[in-house]
Image (cartoon, rainbow, N blue to C red; front, top):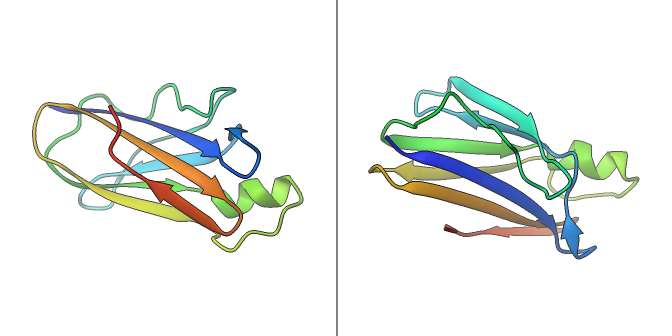
Length: 107
């Protein structure tokens, strides 16, 4: 079974995004886990352990986070769908700014 990690970087400020809510959803839409990014922009424990194969989703509460900072943002939520197909480790980072974001498969 596969494992997962994520982190969020605020590219507009050049530092980790501390306090972003993150939820992990299973292929059938069931919440597997959730957490809040720490001082490094990472979530220490996001789920129940190993992931089964299939399409999962990470949902980031970006609008709430920017609102807490007093920043107007275009995206109220960022949802990243990704496919787990084997027993590898999947790292899914989010690079974030008020009017854009990007992601990639990390290591």
